[in-house]
Length: 623
Image 1 (tube, rainbow, N blue to C red):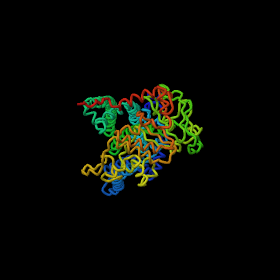
Image 2: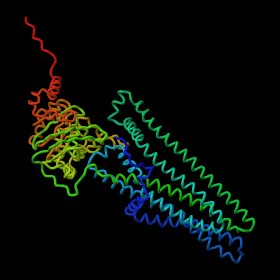
Image 3: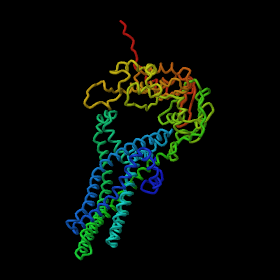
Image 4: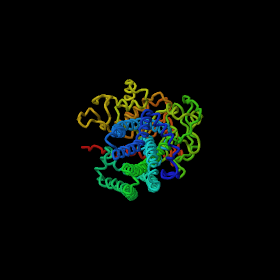
């Protein structure tokens, strides 16, 4: 899929100033005391340098102009400077704790809301869209920190603003001209930092696909499932070169940006140093001519340095707010993403299936620029009967299943549940009446009990139900022999590096995993529709026969949809449907389809020929 034509993050679009209230509201809701403390700290830290500069001036002027009986005038400014020093020494530790606390709370809240939203996207359209994945990855990585960073940036602006106003007033009193020069020198820094932020955000967006490819090659090199082929075919070097090539592309783009940052910020630093140096020369000349006291010189130097520091802090804070807003914008876009499935405001309750499921004039494609997968399909799945769906790869079988499960809606046409369009139901409620074992089943790095129990969350912890499902899938005896039975972890991912205990986790074969996936589907045994997508593709002949026997018994009297390339598994279905090039080519029972001498007959004869013995038995010799 191509990227949408909408605005990129370095253009007007995601991450606008209008997002600031949402970010602040989230920070305030998650950690109100931390926000209040950081606000008070910013006010104090902003005013402390100005107060310190004035106390220093008073102290120096008192020292140079005091007599022995006027030493008591030194006590007040000295004690004030000491108090500021003590508080300033303690604040960073308390501020660091409050900021970290805020960050943790916000990260938890963002992660909760983000993946609640992702879970609420009932269809698959967004999850199969690469640009959406880019946004989701950025929202997860940086969006969790953005509200805290936006708050920190805004408090930095407040802090820098207080310092700046205080020092600018002081500097204006001492030298209005020098105050103007110092302010003018920071304008290029503001413009340059804004441009750099846009480039940083744009680079992250453009490098999204490259980073995905780099992670893809990295995962292949360390993935156990790919390890056999990688080693057998000797592709490790090839994949490593691909990974390094993508990484070099990322590094080259990042290096170019870093060089630009170096040139820009280096030039601005030189400009600031020149302005400060010229101001120091001017103040020294003013002191020699008697226009400035020692305290005035110290105050002037502190004011120039403080003004430049405050302006630099202002630029950094604006940069932080701008950059964080761009990243928070990805979170906002994800949260505002509408589901690809329309759900009525008052969905109809899903009744038990009594008549059947009908696909009426269904056309489907995954995008306007994509080819048609289904082309005018009319199909009825009768209640209480087993329907087998067969066809070549790419015929549209899996897509049809997605439409029946309402993971997508038809581009044209309708899918009906007892005559009611599926779009009139809430997708989540509809799916509670279904169970499925998909060909691309999920292998969870969890215990056996949890792997099976995820088929019906209500059964987690119900050992009898889990065991019954495992028995139906023919995997119970194997599970019972594992080191910890149903509590055995089906992964080595979480094994303690200091432990060599083999009971800490086991790895299953493909066929064993497939039985676990079947058990997960069988756990939902009181559902209206059972979907079995290649349920025995990873099994040996004996295991396939056993599973086929169990499935035949289990499907009796149930509404089921079986997808299989193995026609021996499909032949006992109540009805067999042949899908070809997105259309229904044939349908009927096994004998009827053989008599048609069409697609099904040809495929069945090809497969059955492979099982026949090709050798001939010679007669015994006679004497």
